[in-house]
Image (cartoon, rainbow, N blue to C red; front, side):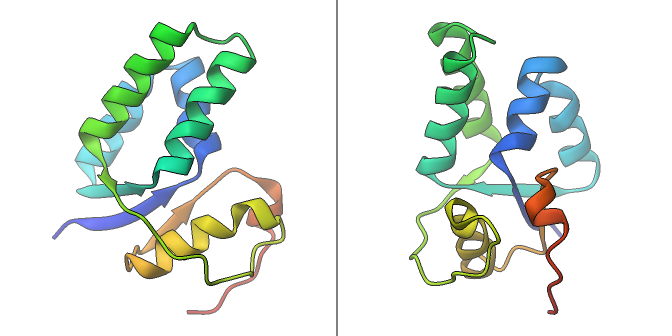
Length: 117
């Protein structure tokens, strides 16, 4: 059975700029995971890749197109205000409202958060 997950934008960006998305996709496929994203996250990934000059706009669009081909795109309602970083509240909204099993992040502010199911 496929497990829904939410990957923080930083995780997508790190793979896109260092290793390419394919190794991440291989892990997603191997463990039968289905990432859930929203349009805000896709826009954030694109902007960061271009703004930091890690990729051209054309390369960044290819990354976004590939991500779109392997994820479920959802729109969440802003409900929760539990993130230590207010701009990351959407991750919790997205995860809770889609019943995702995990939020995967390397953001230190999120990693110290103690959550109970």
